[in-house]
Image 1 (cartoon, one colour):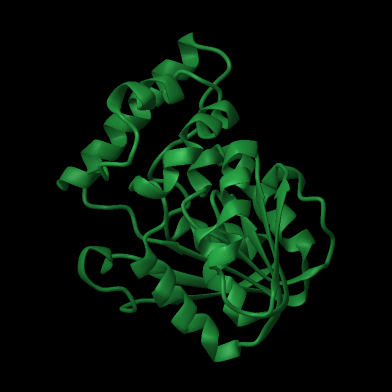
Image 2: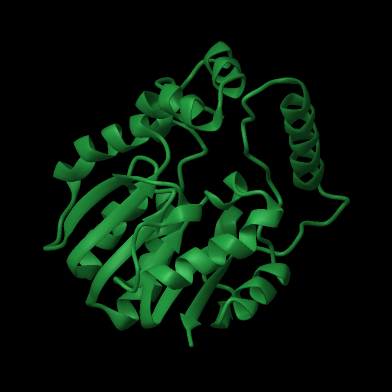
Length: 238
């Protein structure tokens, strides 16, 4: 499951017993070697879809982590790519990775809460990969509103999600068990560590985006192999 350079079991336990931002500060030096980092195979498929409308002037990556998606967006953008994350440790590792990026766009890492995005009508594109699990369901409409606020008129929000897996599948019960453990952990330990699976799935994700003023297109059949169940969501601000 983990690369030899990835975190040990005890390091993951220490992370889970910390707050969300402190936990990711601890994980940051080894994050690129964990399955939590969005796989390149997924990012390459997203990049191929975005190339249809490239070049893009400016893009925003919510929950950018160590910058994997930003490095994908760099060659597609003419001006800038801004990544926001609540973990200073993740941002620090991301800044060190800039030298691996091709393209003309400038990359900026900003410490910020995605529920309080410090930008208004500044981006043509916003993306979020693998970070929606850090937002409780009651906060998701606010997240969508913040994304809409950050985009220029006609701007797009792009993410990858799926439908709820079958209740008979192994993946479903692993996710449900993980969520149960996290709910229990957050009941007895403060500050909380907010990370839940089975979040922002279709068709609820489409409904949330449409309620937030987006016109939504869902593309299927783009991803292959173990990711074949995933779907690309392209939401255009009306």
